[in-house]
Image 1 (cartoon, rainbow, N blue to C red):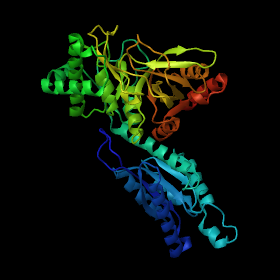
Image 2: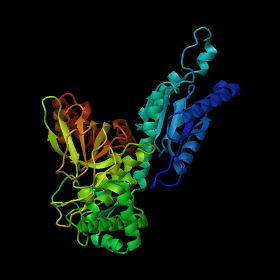
Image 3: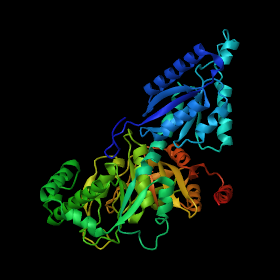
Image 4: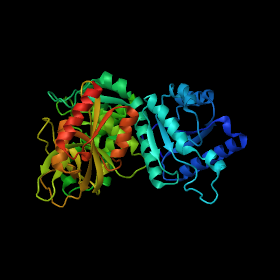
Length: 500
């Protein structure tokens, strides 16, 4: 498994367990095991990012429960894949499934892809019974009201591979949330609703620990950084990014850059020492800092940290989870905010940005290093990276606390190339066209209670987030599927009844 700067050094895997029974005899059971191993071997040769480990062909209630209990305690196992090669009477699965604590996927497939018309006989029919063995298993799962992913199709099909990989990424995201620690420097922006929430309920649901620290603790960490480290980081800034010829001649800009480097090193040091993989800041609490952290946040996000502005700890956690779910992909993921619209007779667009904090992983080319005045926060002009986002298919997502539950709102978008010059807006930005269109998607987003803060990702799509909501057992609303606002409102009302 490929590494990530913040991903724990464990070779994660998913367990593959095949269901059958003793009815068929040893020779047939050997064939079932052999064919299961062939499937797992071929899946591991596909584009699926994660390793699949074949465990066994289970034949009794005792063996099923034993394997499931083993998976519960195995730190490498992120989830299970079940397949019924033959008929496996599902009452055998009750005791085991009643103990399961990992997400599981029901793969509804069969070893052969086509019917062998000239050779098919009753022996073949008795052996290749996935068509109704899986239905027996599915019935029990529904009777037990178990949340699971069901994927149907032949195991050689690339679409099946993609669906399996998508679900696995969701499982990794949930696993990350269970151990995630979020540091909050300062509180939420005053009087803002969507960035608030119940941290106890959040930890109960996801496992995420969210704790606050006075800005003075960050300031102390920044002040402890030695000058050699600061100069070295400034050299990296000047080598990695473009800037105007006059930039280095400006004493004020260079002083700002050195202070920005101090903040980045202090932030990273504090987060690493205390095991945080996500954090928040707020422009309302910068006591002791020279400037609002800009380039520091942008670069730390690129390294894998989650971030939320104005104390938005839910979005910080979701940014981190989405970055982990995108592991192995080149496209980027960032904290984002809807800023302003472009209403046009042909196509409507959204211009997204933030004051400073947009991750450089979504940049369409090498970012430009700038130091400019920021008319908020009352501090010195901060250093930041300025760029336009890459074009391509993307997704916007918001995780909100509705009081009695958490809701994930998702909108597929198309990131567009920005054709116009924006000389007076020295911030990173993205321009996108929402699906289905701006009028419908924005209306649905607002009705669903989506925040103005989002995760913007070119690396994952709505299916990853749908699977993430499935394995996390939370509500998910996809607004690009909305055709009729009245019907959508009725669906929201129905959801309110279900969750109440």
